[in-house]
Image (cartoon, rainbow, N blue to C red; front, side, top):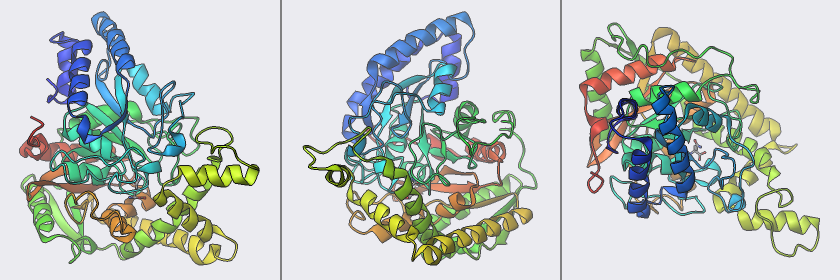
Length: 483
Ligand code: GLN
């Protein structure tokens, strides 16, 4: 049962083929059976069973939504009332959230079940899940490899069938990159589409939550619940939310696909390049037309991101001071000692590196040279995309330059790690929506195809992804040992 898609499970629940309590128990058992993957920071067994019981009552009454009784797992970046919310950090190891993120409230209102909180890179900073205070996560396709990050727990949990759906967040690639490395479907919505309220802030102008699922059809169902205006998030969009499932089957005749020449360089593993080419050929068979495009400022995306994101994180993380909540050092001698030791003892090395870079880039003497310059580059990159999207409907390319790498392989080399997001980061700078869908394998490890659309074109992206998933079965493959 656990291998069914979310939409199949929803049908089974409604028809009474099985109950949410049965389904929830199956997933909870599977989570325990595969605990060595280290996907979960917290398992909320009691709460899950109580929610499943409520869902069964609601299902029996016939007022169920598509998510009623569906067991989901939440990235531990979303605040969950009464449940430990760590953001992968020692700083929040003792933090029980006093309120729910809007996304969590929405899932609760829909009657979804929460199985637990998923492992992630500390404060979502990383591309391998290795910066987590709770340890690395294993990739089910090769347990010596990383699942990607920062939503590594989410992607690995989906690949190992430990939940029917999961949430992720994407600041520079953290939904799409782990989705690609674990062979699942991930959607990073347009900036402002999904509320950030109660989603612990990393870089506020880039952060965006989204679904991580088995296929596009399931992503449409989850996004339907997650999306929408939230008065509690000042950057939330008031655009009406369309029906994401309605157009899934639309034809793709005449679809114009742009392939940026900057994506297909020597930095891209040639086998991945061939996989992407094969995927694009599938689209041609479905009636699409391919056009070469250029994104001339793409090469500046990583440097610009690694000024802007640290600058924002240095401000966002200043709230963790040992005074109000989170970790507090033992026996501080004075206030300065309390601040410095609480932060020094509870933040990991990568978080500290980013706070230092961000503080430096924002300091009076360097602001113009670094931060202001990076913001100008951000504008140029955004214009590259808006320009390209006047000529084509969507842009396609790889998600990652390589497949899943070994645990430990890049953790000592931040630059190599940062390059993992070379194809995803620019999209966050522009605020555009993008998906990663399974498109093949290289040496038995999954490869993702990236599909980038114009602002608020999520329904179209889901349609494009769904059509491909109707004619391919990459998304249905199962890692050995997780059948
Ligand atoms: N790997 C990127 C970083 O470390 C992106 C992370 C993310 O999207 N949260 O910042």
